[in-house]
Length: 68
Image 1: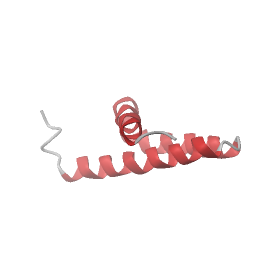
Image 2: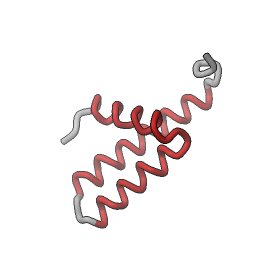
Image 3: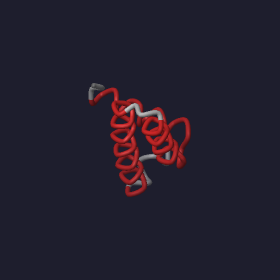
Image 4: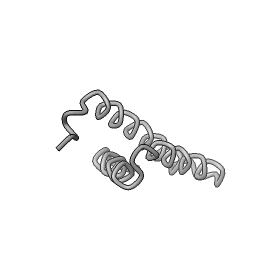
């Protein structure tokens, strides 16, 4: 099992690397894991997707934070 801090770090890394496409990339990885019958990775990527979505919504609601 992957710990929460690793999930959050992975989500932040995806956002840094893919920007607005981070959620799509995380969902793609989850789908690929499911197709490969790798349920642990699928669950992990689903959780990363959830965190990416939450972080992006939070950032969109607070544009002044990222306007430096």
